[in-house]
Length: 75
Image 1 (cartoon, rainbow, N blue to C red):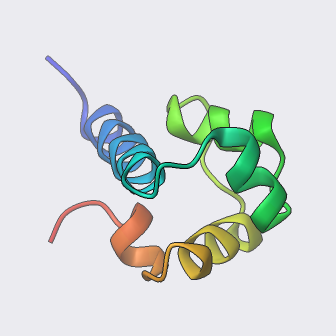
Image 2 (image 1 turned 120 degrees about the horizontal axis):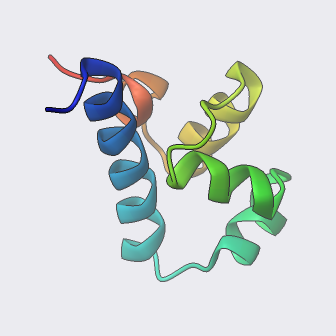
């Protein structure tokens, strides 16, 4: 059985990856446009590392959403 934190990590990475793929962007393109490194984006998408607040803000702004919607978990 998955823990709550594991479920949240799955949701986070799915949301970020989904937005990136819907925009038809590669990791490298998002990195170049946001200033967030490819390894950092990859770690977030894979659930290996939570985003730093500045990174979360940059990604949310880039994808025209809120940090809560991008990484907020459940409502």
